[in-house]
Image (cartoon, rainbow, N blue to C red; front, side, top):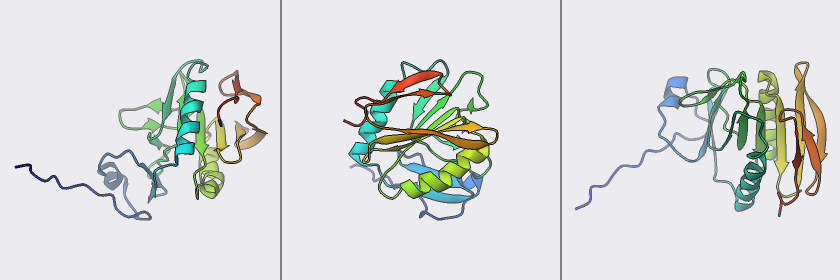
Length: 187
């Protein structure tokens, strides 16, 4: 006879949690963020989101100059009670961000957020302000439907919009110090 294992469930989105409660949550492949002490649980991404994420990861992996490139789910602990989970994140060698056992600690050098239905406003406003506040060197917002990447660089305490790039364009990443070719990313 097979013994039934009780499934661990997450608290409902919007629940206020302490760091200790957040860290005691069961392991999951869902994107589970703690923003200002509030639990954010995102539904699984659409296939288009995952394809763009995989292609971007494959495009970036061979050109990163050093450090480590990671994909979701990976928590970035920016401060106590603030742990977003970006779609892609790069930590340069010698970065302010430290690769810990459970989280990345501190602001990464590159954060990529790929819009999902209902996430664009959150990524544009809340996460933009969060990443800017903590000094992420470069922030990319990717729209798989409209097929563009909007790039921001951190300069003098604020994000500066570098540009918006379409599916057949190449742009220079200030953080990576290399050109990024977008051909085929949105196919």
